[in-house]
Structures are given as structure tokens and as C-alpha cells.
Image 1 (cartoon, one colour):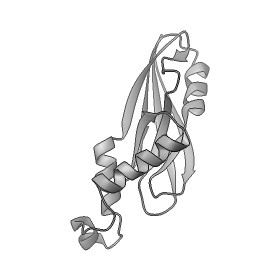
Image 2 (tube, rainbow, N blue to C red; image 1 turned 90 degrees about the vertical axis):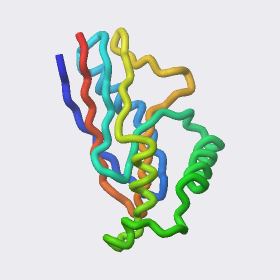
Image 3 (cartoon, rainbow, N blue to C red; image 1 turned 120 degrees about the vertical axis):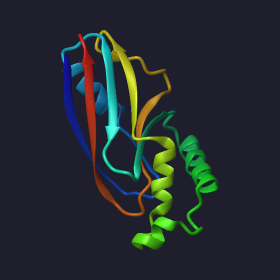
Image 4 (cartoon, rainbow, N blue to C red; image 1 turned 45 degrees about the vertical axis):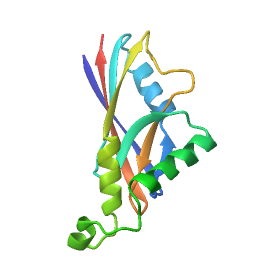
Amino acid sequence: MVITRRISIQTKGHSELIDITQGVAQEVSGSGLSDGTVTIFISGSTAAVSTIEYEPGLLNDFQDMWDRLVPLNITYQHDRAWGDGNGYSHVRASLLGPSITIPFTNGRMTLGRWQQIVVVDFDNRPRLREIVLQVVGQ
């Protein structure tokens, strides 16, 4: 069986990390399925989905890593073409990726003790983001 659900969140942009673990867990539990997988997909090309230990030190380390790897203050061809100043956000999002898949058993995701699901909004402005969940199982 395949069940599709959507979660909408308001973001601030600028590499903000938003913990969506509880929302995804509720949808998996509410699906009525016992065992399977849930795919979490973010619509849009300037945001991504991952897992992380959602604690302040690591959140800062994560932001610092992106600033070193894909800096804000260099020229991006995308910005020259569109003038919206978010070329870096497209590059960052493509490196991290728009989706992840997590197995679940007995209606519970098999995340590690310190592992949370996060949306990362790399854009340079606030956005209303739509997250698509596909729960597949039995």
C-alpha cells in the first residue's frame, strides 16, 4: 500500500534547519501500516532534507560547514542570469539532496537515538515549503 501525505512549514531561509521528526512520525504512525519505508521529499530547488543530531553546537557546525564549502560572497552564474542572489542556495541544496528514505517497523521509524529528520532551507528569503511523504508498506 502507498499513502501520500503533505506537511507545510514556514521557513526563514538562510540555511535554517527545521526539525520535522515528530510530524513525520505522526504520519507514519497514523498510516496504519506496520512495516515499510517513508520517503521524505521537499519540493523546490533551494531546500533539502537530511538527518542530524539536532543540538545547538552541531547546528552551528553545520551552518559553518556550508559557509566554507559553498560561500555566500562569490559570484554565481545563476545570479547573473536571474538577479535573485540565491545561486549559492541552489548549489547547497543540490549537494545535500531533496529526499531521504527511512525504514519503519511496528509503526515506528528506525532512527537512531540522537537522529532527527530536518529540512534545510538554503534560500535567501522566507518561504512556505511543502514536504511530500510517501509511506509504503504493509
